Amino acid sequence: MMKHLMITMIALLMASGVYSQDFSYLNEIELNNMDQLQNAEDDVLECCYYLVAARYNKNDDQRILATDFVTKWVGGMFTEPIVSDKIKEVTEERQELTDLYFAYYALRYIENEGEMNTDELVQKALKGVIDFCENPVNKIKLTKELKNVKELIDAGTLSAYLQE
Image (cartoon, rainbow, N blue to C red):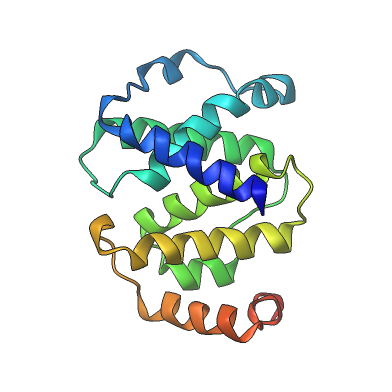
């Protein structure tokens, strides 16, 4: 619990500098092997904090750079696909929701030092997407599918749903 409080405090502090971010340096970072992927975790974490703290704006160049970097990192880091058919259903294949899912998945993976299993990561990522969408400042509304997932989370049956 204390770890999550500390992480939230860090995210809030980083959010204060959200509009001054410059992610152009990410173009110089290579993600071609496991060593490079592991060495980039701090950069991925910075991108994730930005993506979950800044309200959504599809024209934000820094958001685009951070999203592309996180997506590339996730694609290289995980051998198994993290977007199942169920996730595609939930995000309705809307890119902004998929991008948020990747950001929360990577964030939870790094925060927990890789010690969460895939099922837990998927659930935490979906919860993060829902929390983001529930904040009206972020300008992304909960879809019908995400509302259903929220009900499953509240009922404690999300894991069973994802396994179907």
